[in-house]
Length: 351
Image (cartoon, rainbow, N blue to C red; front, side, top):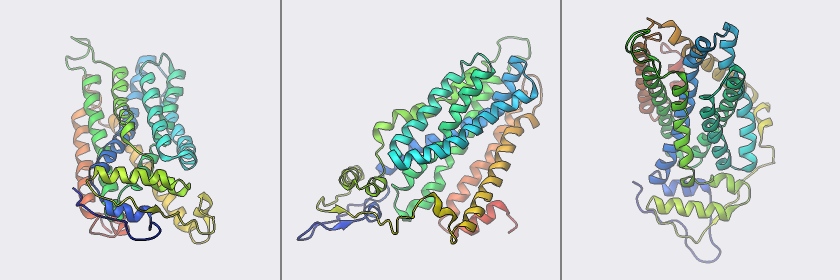
């Protein structure tokens, strides 16, 4: 819980305060925890939808007697949607705000995810999963919304801890798949498993919960200040302070965001001072995503055991233990090691 802090005051013109200064004064408490939970649900939904692909593509292939190439298009449609969604939602968030992009992304995953459970054929499923992928691409925006609302001293730990929701999503989806796809009585005996449609429906629940929390989420003050809407940012900051039981003297004005020479934008990633760093980060993200998603999509097939337990769910759940341990260890080390060192260890434990 944040301690009571007083900021502002003084004679003459109201003092100018930056969003960063005010975030430090407000601290990390109930207001940030609430946002952390709803953004975490988005991360969990991302994990659930990605892990769902490893089961969904196999199950619809059996139900609809698809060819192998058609089976692969189910996963490909989601990732194609993510590629498009990342770009479009990023531009949308910069133009119209973090909160509208947050709402739209969550709505995409919820609506298209629910309708995916009722798809009648492969074409419908591909279109709907493409829509889910676009929404997942927009889930980077809630991540930004949280980062811009957390004091800099806590930001590394909070953003690292946020990925524990990814592990939660992996475990939750595997447990749900166990109940929906495992034939407890044996093939051809007793009750049939619920099937992939119910599993797809359950996968859409976390973003629906996040959507219900939208009235409790505010626009990013940093974005508002950057757009010259300082008074709106001030109202949100004072509301956050009240939620955290921190007293802020309202006699202050929001300092305008420094824009330098106006060159800030996507093109800045490729300037002479940044292009090598940008290429390295892109290559790093591509390689880790390629490896992780490849394992996630292939593991259920690799561990398949019997007709009653085709995916070896116990082994899949056991594999999630590594993610739990990794998330906990990262949260412990993030405040004690340099980012480069921790990243190097995560990619190569021998380094």
